[in-house]
Length: 226
Ligand SMILES: [Zn+2]
Image 1: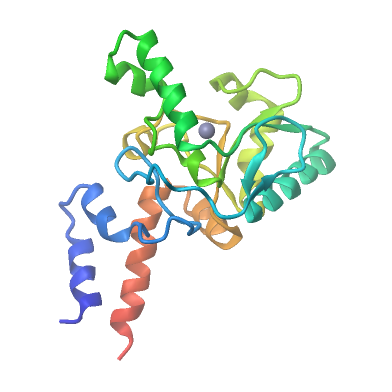
Image 2: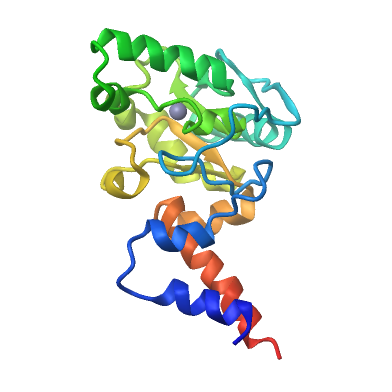
């Protein structure tokens, strides 16, 4: 049995929990890769800094992202303005490990050291996608942001329907909490590249689940190759 075939049979064993096949499906060898998985289970190193950060030229704050993601974001905000007449704003892009650590520790103190409670609100350092430089929390000009009310704004509705055209996915949708480990966040968009974003949008499943299917397809193709 080839390596591809044995991995394939491992992945297709139906009774396994999601996290077990993810151990082989997640592309964790490459933190600079567009599909690197960062969540409560798979963390990014405290020393990781994205290679090509720059300011995205969009209205808003905390606008740093990786080059390719920043370009996608600029394109997306311009299209939203042109097609829907809505001004989207950046709220929070790249966050260094140390700033996530500060936010987390502040939250931890405010809930008197209750780790479970703190983690309901803030991702522990190393488990936030914002450290990858591929993520942007998006708002709509003069609307409240970073709460679920944002999901009902025209800007949020446009962004969720169209983000894939610019390489982004809505990362934490309603009903995906058990898989992603995060509550519904209608503002949090992750860059994965245009081709991946289209496939993930069409599949309408969380990145975690899609990575398993995607890797399974690659392995099937490999196993079929004589
Ligand atoms: Zn976010």
